[in-house]
Length: 310
Image 1 (tube, rainbow, N blue to C red):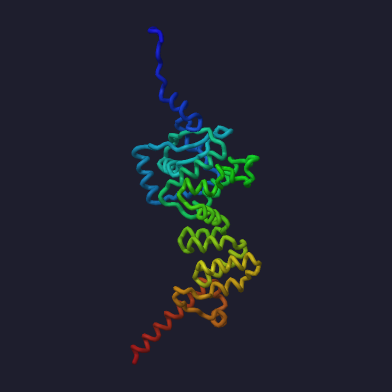
Image 2 (cartoon, helix red, strand yellow):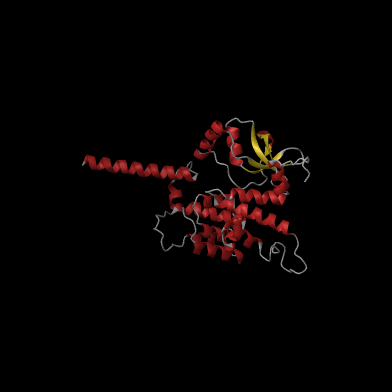
């Protein structure tokens, strides 16, 4: 190098771009109104106590960790990661927040969105279910058709591993569990909510997911009426009948009425006899319950009065 030749050190931005390319992207502040939700985003943004704490932190310190977005053709931006921070910023009345803008394909955006959100401490079964499904479908699209030397079906050409096995390695879940979570996406919303609320155990829910939609709604009615949920054995029995196309409403009631080994016997009433003595204007389930409770209270009150009068 000549003495008079200038030696210019590369800037941090230059190094950043050379090392990672457009995938890492640029950092800029963007108006929150220009940030669109990720289509089909499976993770819920709850406005709870943790959100309140985040809002207070943002009011005091601003958004310290930039959200990740990608630019769309119309000049707007799609959120990839940081939906909670964005919502907290909106509540804090911030008009713009720092964003990392990345140049991503649809598949890259989906995979990054799922991977970023799976780092959260608490994730609902429904969130995992749809997240794993979205990631698996994106990975299959990325893999494309298998090479001539690989006769495996599409989605199984990732270093001779299935997409389930690949996701399992990355998440620490077993490939079987990945498939079980994805099965939950076949549940009707009401039953899937019961899984999130821990009213139905995970494994029975997986078996129930094989039932047809109308069968699931019939099962839901049976669960609500009997105030119980199926055990794993009952769920397997329901699935078997459904696959045989022999799962009728009567069969669902019969299976659900089977006593479980650890079940505490429940008080049952003959509804036909009760309905025959109820007033005609008492129609709904709630009205019936309220009326029966009122009658029992009145009966107890009269019994106490009789004892007092003796």
